[in-house]
Length: 318
Image (cartoon, rainbow, N blue to C red; front, side, top):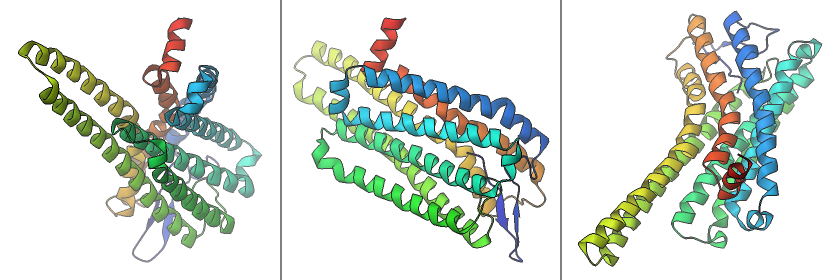
């Protein structure tokens, strides 16, 4: 996500360090954007198309019967959409289109919806993993996924209203103060809620799995030798669940944490954007690259850690 830097001072005025190179953009940020971010998004476009193709062509019946597979496919499509929007935005900034407020505003809205969708499908993936380990059926748990989709719809509607009533000259932050305030608080609440939900769900999944497995040992083990064998098998399962949780949960958090922290310290007044622009430019470079990496990391995780259909196909091709 191309980060915004926006803060209200004691007199009520605001400061914005624009993401658009045609505006106020530091040389380091410009270099990082076109030497690192844009190539990452290009790789993300290619990689997501490739993984989606593999995902859809392998064992289609199992895909249609598995909600987890459908969620992962939608997550990959969202990553692809964000990669495409980012590529279009960065290229447009280099030409006359970089001064077209209508195009910049459309790019801002599309980018925010793509990022919100990525986070929502990550929440759904964590939910699905949680319910699978608890052996709950799709029908029993459908309401939770509908709720996540409904919240995404509310956030998207808020963004539509924001950008419909205010242009965005940096493809991120609305130009008008009221809309910028709505943008910052709704985005802060949405991002924080989704990140907390992802962490909580994967932690709960791991501890629930561990408790169930250890109860299984106590209930069904009849001898010391059998208990040792079962303990080894259970430890292996625990390691797999933990590894899956770290890969699909905390890596997502790591990708978005620098962005959230940067905007958080500005809103909280811990960093002054008027006087500490050098620090914020460096921080912004790091945050942008981390978010861009999610478009590459997610499809790689699907290939190497995700459903068996994709992994088996990779082994055959190798």
